[in-house]
Image 1 (cartoon, rainbow, N blue to C red):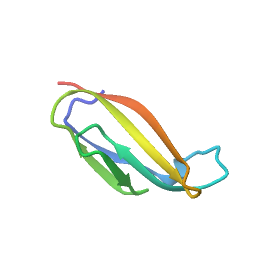
Image 2 (cartoon, one colour):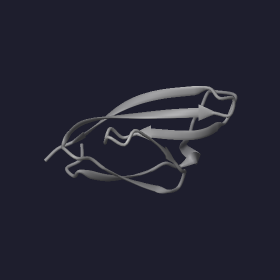
Image 3 (spheres, helix red, strand yellow):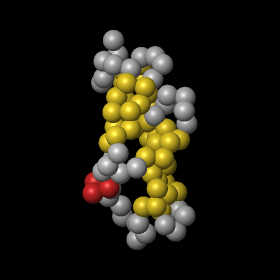
Image 4 (cartoon, rainbow, N blue to C red):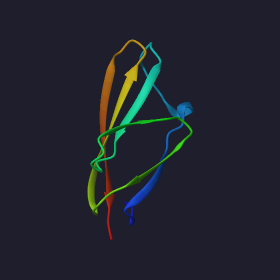
Length: 80
């Protein structure tokens, strides 16, 4: 739970774990802030802002080198 309307995310490729035989080609994330899927780069800070407090559904879309796509979902909360 976060008490601010912005947060810095940082994705590190050494923490990417897969049970696929192919490697990850790209990672996209929808932070539920109205901007849709955004490509994230390993090791680069991604500052995300939301227009309002409340539950946020964070969705990742992982694309592998063989063009397989795996969407995943998680929840985060912004509160006052």
